[in-house]
Image (cartoon, rainbow, N blue to C red; front, side):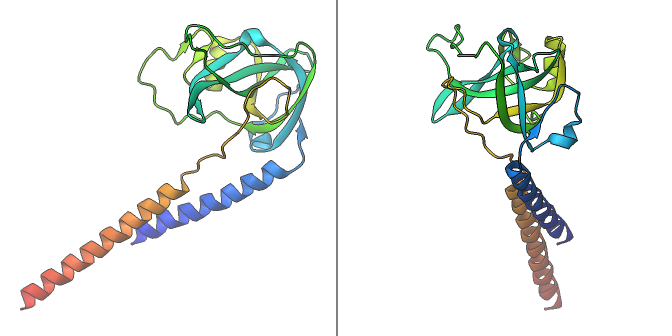
Length: 211
């Protein structure tokens, strides 16, 4: 029973966190400058940044599905203010070509652009069954550490999920973070059910012995 209530407490805590993240995402955008920021100061906040995209360092995250179609998330670094520090921008989803050996063409502005979006941290909750997780520009998953090893540029410790439109044809429909609230409710139900089963078994055995 104690474990059941513990899981309920965790579920309620994550519901409060989800409400806070939703509030942060609705606040006015923070301007992201070239000076390195602390991830905790901007995570789950809307940010605005001006810079120039660097297409040669783009990566395509494979097996991203939109409305039943397989494609990629296009992640591209943006040189903040056109300088030497970059921030990774998830520009959105694009359908895969029929020829999987050929990457789809992504329209990218050549000059300075202003991007607004949500500052997030790449998820580390993934399973990779193969060692071939990054072939050229096609990657299965993205972590900042993996990107830093592959591309020698100075990065901000976040990724921006782009929300602003650039007329590039990319789909930007971002799902809220899965905090696992329903999992905690399921675990709490299992613990309560187990406690009830043990109680029923105990009393049934006790009554049988007494008789």
